[in-house]
Length: 425
Ligand SMILES: [Zn+2]
Image 1 (spheres, rainbow, N blue to C red):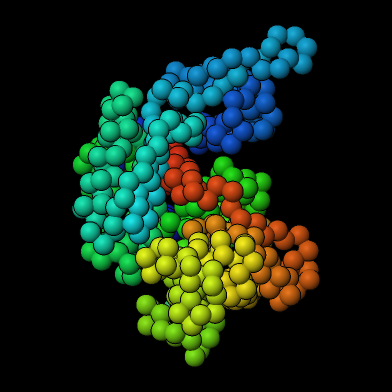
Image 2 (cartoon, rainbow, N blue to C red):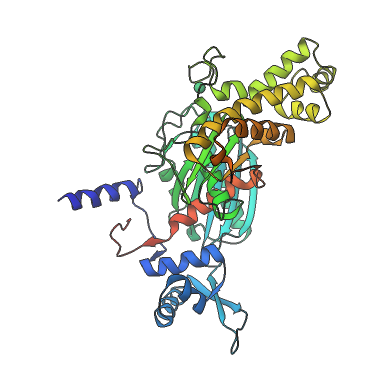
């Protein structure tokens, strides 16, 4: 009975919110073959056999089934090691497509990719999440439809949609739970809404920072890294955790919400209601706020000039530019922010021992001094052993990490194992 309960629990956890059609149902062994090709690109039957530890005959039989079902195709010849050049196998790029959607607080980015993960179309538009889910998701649907139509692809051939949203997501249900900056999105059935227009698409929703971390894990600097953190610094501050090459979401999906770690009990009130949260003191808005105060107090001629030029306001990016040009007040603001973030990261490093920290999000574009301040604080405050093999870098894919991760979120789930113990229907 216990075993049955375990299976039921697993079923509930992995079962989508609504019944879904599954166009890509494959066996566990076929799934394994497909994952090697996904990770390493076109491979020969011999290479697949050595990766999977299967006999050449077994791989040939699996590959034949996958070729017959149209999931794989032969894509040319590999290098010969004596004898005939081996035929290489890859996903059939014309079989179906997935979409990756990155919903930001005020913008929307969409990319459509084939089953190899190759992006064939991208698009962006302004969209305010405060206008509510139906309004924003209608823009998403229209965007995807326009991109498919442009390439004469029928909506039925969209097999997966990965969506990153700027709020806490219960991953098993794909529902937002008490999102602070997304009024009206609480428990909105995003999957059902999207499936009205894309009946064959498996829809997977996750928090935006987890999705960015997944982008780095599957296609960026995190490809060969087992344990790393992705820190997004923008209007808020969040952390995607990659633990043993998988996204770690915690027991209810909100692991990595580091923006509300307290750095000063006497600090300003955060929108969460507590005092002195990291994001209330070190994210983009507090950087801008301090710079405006510095200009008003005549502490920086550069900031006063910039504030006049931009109609009485300043952004974190303005502060970064001023600091790069040697403005002392700006440099101090940036270093303070970097120090507070570095202080929290030092705690995470001692606790989690990652080998890489990637910093992304809008504020990561404010120049090298910010990164230097973060690095210095982490090195000063962490145990020597934990920083021995630690690298801290800006994310090179920061602008596309969201859509890339969303594409891979979809690709991670479109292949469903049939006949397994945890079949999802
Ligand atoms: Zn807070």
